[in-house]
Amino acid sequence: MVRSKATSPHAFVATEADFENVERVRRSAGQRFRDEEGFSLTYLPFITRAVVEALREFPNLNASVDGDALVVHGDINVGVAVDLDFEGLIVPVIHRADEITLRGLARRIRDVAQRARTRQLGADDVVGGTFSITNDGPFGTMFTVPIINQPQVAILATDGIKRRPVVIEQADGSESISIHSTGLLGMAWDHRAVDGAYVSSFLARVTTLIAERDWSTEL
Image (cartoon, rainbow, N blue to C red; front, side, top):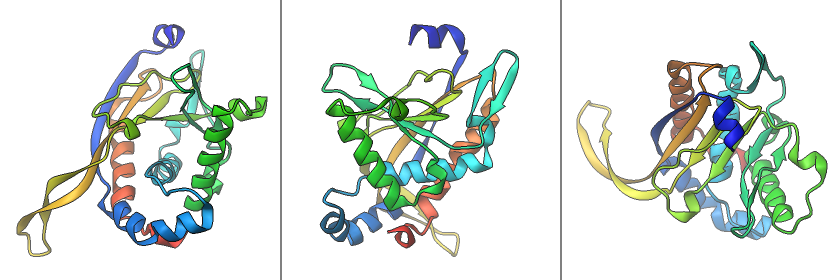
Protein backbone atom coordinates (compact mmCIF):
# COMPACT_ATOMS: atom_id res chain seq x y z
CA MET A 1 0.00 0.00 0.00
CA VAL A 2 2.89 2.37 0.73
CA ARG A 3 4.40 1.53 -2.66
CA SER A 4 1.07 2.20 -4.35
CA LYS A 5 0.78 5.65 -2.79
CA ALA A 6 4.37 6.43 -3.72
CA THR A 7 3.93 5.17 -7.29
CA SER A 8 0.54 6.57 -8.31
CA PRO A 9 -0.60 10.18 -7.84
CA HIS A 10 -3.93 9.25 -6.27
CA ALA A 11 -7.04 11.29 -6.97
CA PHE A 12 -10.58 10.59 -5.75
CA VAL A 13 -14.13 11.30 -6.83
CA ALA A 14 -17.49 10.06 -5.54
CA THR A 15 -21.10 10.13 -6.67
CA GLU A 16 -24.47 9.05 -5.27
CA ALA A 17 -26.21 6.13 -6.91
CA ASP A 18 -29.94 5.38 -6.80
CA PHE A 19 -30.42 1.66 -6.17
CA GLU A 20 -34.21 1.67 -6.12
CA ASN A 21 -34.37 -0.18 -9.45
CA VAL A 22 -31.99 -2.80 -8.04
CA GLU A 23 -33.96 -2.96 -4.80
CA ARG A 24 -37.19 -3.73 -6.67
CA VAL A 25 -35.54 -6.65 -8.43
CA ARG A 26 -34.03 -7.93 -5.18
CA ARG A 27 -37.46 -7.81 -3.53
CA SER A 28 -39.30 -9.49 -6.40
CA ALA A 29 -36.71 -12.14 -7.31
CA GLY A 30 -34.68 -12.42 -4.10
CA GLN A 31 -36.46 -15.42 -2.58
CA ARG A 32 -36.50 -17.34 -5.85
CA PHE A 33 -32.81 -16.58 -6.34
CA ARG A 34 -32.01 -17.79 -2.81
CA ASP A 35 -34.02 -20.99 -3.34
CA GLU A 36 -32.20 -21.70 -6.61
CA GLU A 37 -28.67 -20.62 -5.66
CA GLY A 38 -28.54 -21.19 -1.90
CA PHE A 39 -27.41 -17.66 -1.02
CA SER A 40 -28.81 -14.13 -0.97
CA LEU A 41 -28.70 -11.71 -3.88
CA THR A 42 -26.65 -8.74 -2.68
CA TYR A 43 -25.97 -5.37 -4.26
CA LEU A 44 -22.39 -6.21 -5.23
CA PRO A 45 -23.16 -8.28 -8.37
CA PHE A 46 -25.31 -5.44 -9.72
CA ILE A 47 -22.54 -2.92 -9.09
CA THR A 48 -19.93 -5.21 -10.64
CA ARG A 49 -22.08 -5.80 -13.72
CA ALA A 50 -22.59 -2.05 -14.17
CA VAL A 51 -18.87 -1.40 -13.74
CA VAL A 52 -17.97 -4.03 -16.33
CA GLU A 53 -20.43 -2.56 -18.81
CA ALA A 54 -19.10 0.95 -18.24
CA LEU A 55 -15.48 -0.17 -18.62
CA ARG A 56 -16.27 -1.18 -22.19
CA GLU A 57 -17.05 2.46 -22.87
CA PHE A 58 -14.17 3.84 -20.77
CA PRO A 59 -11.33 1.38 -21.48
CA ASN A 60 -8.55 3.65 -20.16
CA LEU A 61 -9.67 2.67 -16.65
CA ASN A 62 -9.17 -1.00 -17.48
CA ALA A 63 -5.46 -0.44 -17.81
CA SER A 64 -1.98 -0.32 -16.29
CA VAL A 65 0.82 2.23 -16.44
CA ASP A 66 4.08 0.88 -17.83
CA GLY A 67 6.74 3.58 -17.71
CA ASP A 68 5.39 6.41 -19.84
CA ALA A 69 2.83 4.20 -21.58
CA LEU A 70 -0.77 3.38 -20.70
CA VAL A 71 -1.45 -0.29 -21.43
CA VAL A 72 -5.17 -0.83 -22.06
CA HIS A 73 -6.22 -4.45 -21.44
CA GLY A 74 -8.50 -6.40 -23.76
CA ASP A 75 -10.00 -8.59 -21.05
CA ILE A 76 -11.89 -7.11 -18.11
CA ASN A 77 -10.67 -9.00 -15.04
CA VAL A 78 -12.29 -7.62 -11.88
CA GLY A 79 -10.61 -8.06 -8.52
CA VAL A 80 -12.96 -8.11 -5.52
CA ALA A 81 -11.36 -7.31 -2.17
CA VAL A 82 -12.18 -9.88 0.53
CA ASP A 83 -11.60 -9.38 4.26
CA LEU A 84 -9.99 -12.37 5.99
CA ASP A 85 -11.68 -12.11 9.39
CA PHE A 86 -9.82 -8.88 10.21
CA GLU A 87 -6.48 -10.61 9.61
CA GLY A 88 -5.66 -9.15 6.25
CA LEU A 89 -7.10 -8.55 2.83
CA ILE A 90 -6.87 -10.43 -0.44
CA VAL A 91 -8.18 -9.55 -3.90
CA PRO A 92 -9.25 -12.63 -5.88
CA VAL A 93 -9.91 -11.98 -9.55
CA ILE A 94 -12.98 -12.74 -11.65
CA HIS A 95 -11.44 -13.25 -15.07
CA ARG A 96 -13.27 -12.08 -18.20
CA ALA A 97 -16.04 -10.61 -16.11
CA ASP A 98 -17.45 -8.93 -19.21
CA GLU A 99 -18.52 -12.36 -20.49
CA ILE A 100 -20.57 -13.20 -17.38
CA THR A 101 -24.23 -12.43 -16.64
CA LEU A 102 -25.52 -10.88 -13.44
CA ARG A 103 -26.40 -14.28 -12.01
CA GLY A 104 -23.03 -15.65 -13.05
CA LEU A 105 -21.23 -12.77 -11.36
CA ALA A 106 -23.17 -13.38 -8.16
CA ARG A 107 -22.01 -17.00 -8.24
CA ARG A 108 -18.39 -16.10 -8.98
CA ILE A 109 -18.22 -13.42 -6.28
CA ARG A 110 -19.67 -15.83 -3.75
CA ASP A 111 -17.27 -18.57 -4.82
CA VAL A 112 -14.04 -16.54 -4.67
CA ALA A 113 -15.04 -14.93 -1.37
CA GLN A 114 -15.72 -18.29 0.25
CA ARG A 115 -12.51 -19.81 -1.07
CA ALA A 116 -10.55 -16.76 0.05
CA ARG A 117 -11.84 -17.03 3.61
CA THR A 118 -11.11 -20.77 3.76
CA ARG A 119 -7.61 -20.32 2.27
CA GLN A 120 -8.48 -22.34 -0.84
CA LEU A 121 -7.53 -19.87 -3.55
CA GLY A 122 -5.01 -20.92 -6.17
CA ALA A 123 -2.29 -18.79 -7.75
CA ASP A 124 -4.42 -18.16 -10.84
CA ASP A 125 -7.19 -16.72 -8.66
CA VAL A 126 -5.16 -13.71 -7.52
CA VAL A 127 -3.30 -12.63 -10.67
CA GLY A 128 -4.26 -10.80 -13.82
CA GLY A 129 -6.65 -8.25 -12.35
CA THR A 130 -7.27 -5.13 -14.45
CA PHE A 131 -9.71 -3.23 -12.19
CA SER A 132 -10.66 -3.65 -8.52
CA ILE A 133 -13.71 -3.17 -6.31
CA THR A 134 -13.64 -2.92 -2.52
CA ASN A 135 -16.99 -3.40 -0.80
CA ASP A 136 -17.36 -1.82 2.64
CA GLY A 137 -21.10 -1.40 2.18
CA PRO A 138 -22.12 -4.33 4.43
CA PHE A 139 -20.45 -2.50 7.33
CA GLY A 140 -22.67 0.53 6.80
CA THR A 141 -19.84 2.85 5.79
CA MET A 142 -20.57 6.29 4.37
CA PHE A 143 -17.37 7.31 2.56
CA THR A 144 -14.39 5.12 1.66
CA VAL A 145 -11.17 6.35 -0.01
CA PRO A 146 -9.39 3.19 -1.27
CA ILE A 147 -5.78 2.69 -2.36
CA ILE A 148 -5.10 1.57 -5.92
CA ASN A 149 -4.19 -2.09 -6.37
CA GLN A 150 -0.97 -1.89 -8.40
CA PRO A 151 -0.33 -2.02 -11.33
CA GLN A 152 -3.97 -1.12 -12.03
CA VAL A 153 -5.03 2.50 -12.44
CA ALA A 154 -8.35 2.57 -10.58
CA ILE A 155 -10.34 1.03 -7.73
CA LEU A 156 -14.03 1.51 -6.93
CA ALA A 157 -15.34 1.62 -3.36
CA THR A 158 -18.94 0.81 -2.48
CA ASP A 159 -20.43 2.18 0.72
CA GLY A 160 -23.56 1.55 2.74
CA ILE A 161 -26.90 1.62 0.92
CA LYS A 162 -29.77 3.05 2.97
CA ARG A 163 -33.34 4.25 2.56
CA ARG A 164 -33.27 8.01 2.06
CA PRO A 165 -35.63 10.73 0.76
CA VAL A 166 -34.88 11.76 -2.83
CA VAL A 167 -36.39 14.29 -5.22
CA ILE A 168 -38.09 12.68 -8.22
CA GLU A 169 -38.84 14.60 -11.38
CA GLN A 170 -42.18 13.64 -12.92
CA ALA A 171 -42.94 13.40 -16.65
CA ASP A 172 -44.66 16.80 -16.58
CA GLY A 173 -41.62 18.47 -15.02
CA SER A 174 -43.03 18.65 -11.50
CA GLU A 175 -41.15 17.23 -8.52
CA SER A 176 -42.03 14.97 -5.62
CA ILE A 177 -40.20 13.38 -2.71
CA SER A 178 -39.90 9.60 -2.53
CA ILE A 179 -38.00 7.11 -0.39
CA HIS A 180 -35.30 5.25 -2.34
CA SER A 181 -32.32 3.04 -1.55
CA THR A 182 -29.22 5.13 -2.27
CA GLY A 183 -25.50 4.92 -1.59
CA LEU A 184 -22.18 6.46 -2.53
CA LEU A 185 -19.77 5.03 -5.07
CA GLY A 186 -16.25 6.41 -4.80
CA MET A 187 -13.22 5.82 -6.97
CA ALA A 188 -9.51 6.38 -6.53
CA TRP A 189 -7.55 6.63 -9.75
CA ASP A 190 -4.04 7.17 -11.04
CA HIS A 191 -3.84 10.71 -12.38
CA ARG A 192 -1.07 9.68 -14.76
CA ALA A 193 -3.59 7.55 -16.66
CA VAL A 194 -6.73 9.68 -16.90
CA ASP A 195 -8.18 12.95 -15.69
CA GLY A 196 -11.17 13.82 -13.56
CA ALA A 197 -13.60 14.39 -16.41
CA TYR A 198 -13.01 10.90 -17.74
CA VAL A 199 -13.50 9.29 -14.32
CA SER A 200 -16.58 11.39 -13.53
CA SER A 201 -18.12 10.40 -16.85
CA PHE A 202 -17.38 6.75 -16.08
CA LEU A 203 -19.05 6.98 -12.68
CA ALA A 204 -22.03 8.76 -14.22
CA ARG A 205 -22.42 5.86 -16.64
CA VAL A 206 -22.19 3.32 -13.79
CA THR A 207 -24.89 5.10 -11.79
CA THR A 208 -27.13 5.37 -14.86
CA LEU A 209 -26.83 1.63 -15.48
CA ILE A 210 -27.59 0.85 -11.84
CA ALA A 211 -30.66 3.10 -11.87
CA GLU A 212 -32.10 2.25 -15.29
CA ARG A 213 -30.98 -1.18 -16.52
CA ASP A 214 -33.57 -3.95 -16.78
CA TRP A 215 -31.87 -6.28 -14.32
CA SER A 216 -34.62 -8.86 -14.27
CA THR A 217 -33.60 -10.13 -17.72
CA GLU A 218 -30.31 -11.46 -16.31
CA LEU A 219 -31.91 -13.36 -13.44
